[in-house]
Length: 221
Image (cartoon, rainbow, N blue to C red; front, side, top):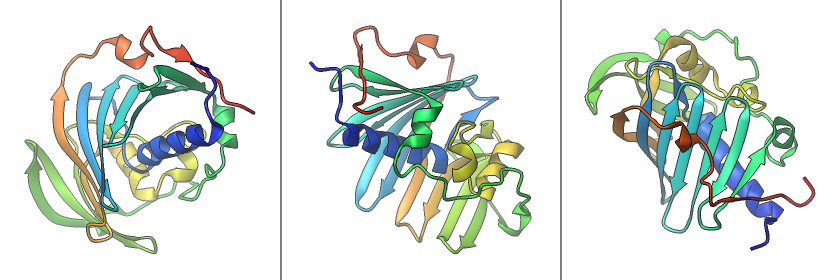
């Protein structure tokens, strides 16, 4: 098989992966293991297996038509395509130059936010973890967020896109040891939900491409 992949296919895959990474999740610090997440939007459901160990992150995304994986090891990024048994290394400079990857959110990670105005005082357990409810309404819509402080920090990317894509509330999660267990956006039109938590030791091999995968290149990059 040719090791070069159509540029538009690559950009689409990376866009989807980073959308979920920067708008949703990335936990480190206290937790090591696997978290299974369901993302539902516009009559589409995507399942994500989310592995975290120290500063290593792996996301396996799949729906009925396709699947792909993303690995972040420190400042190194890999996109894996299981169907083709191929992988792509991505540098920070490549990410900056991808169409549609310009920051649109909060560009000041030090932005102060009074999270108390979002807290409702309601609590409940999700998968055995104590959670509290936040309600956020802004120009982009409304969100109901259930967060726990028992799974370590919610961390958005420290790479080239992190500063532009992190809303102030997610920066607060990162800095204060919270993890989102459920996020309902725009009255249920989009739902992020943790459906399984498996706290366990992970092998370092999880965060590397399988030995039978071939490295691919992108035309013009």
